[in-house]
Length: 178
Image 1 (cartoon, rainbow, N blue to C red):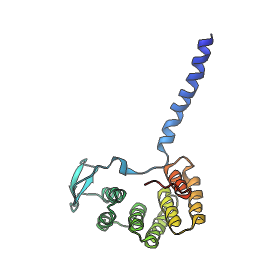
Image 2 (image 1 turned 60 degrees about the horizontal axis):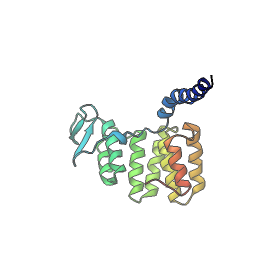
Image 3 (image 1 turned 90 degrees about the vertical axis):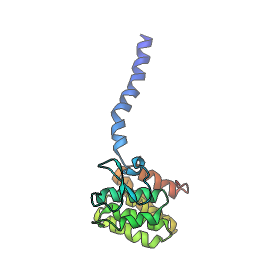
Image 4 (image 1 turned 30 degrees about the vertical axis):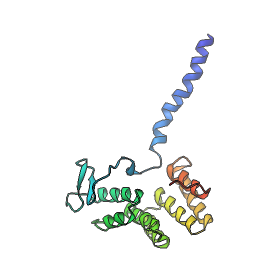
């Protein structure tokens, strides 16, 4: 009987983890960059063919160009990201404005980047990633009060366990991720 009680106590945490893991994994990060491979210069990853294709091909979707621009920006290739975003047929999407803002801010043009973030927010006020980046920009500008406002909004959108909340909170606490 003693062994049976121990097994029951062990089974409960495993059951709880199994039930909650899918929901936790679904929250927060829409970062397609984690699965985007590097392509040679002048090429972009095409999610349909699962290969790198010439940047100027007409078959390439705006979504793939946008995702690859973000991939470039996260690698530090900010101007290349902006140049790719310039080729979009529809540049007026929340992701395109956000990634343009991110790359621009990383080039040291914080005010210009923030203007792009505002355009993204105008399209979707509930887009947590743009809120994170706007908060980081406010930290650069020396306005932690306004960064904390963005953190509060992110908390209302996806809670404290989503990547956007954790990253902005770390930046506010003085421990930004690279």
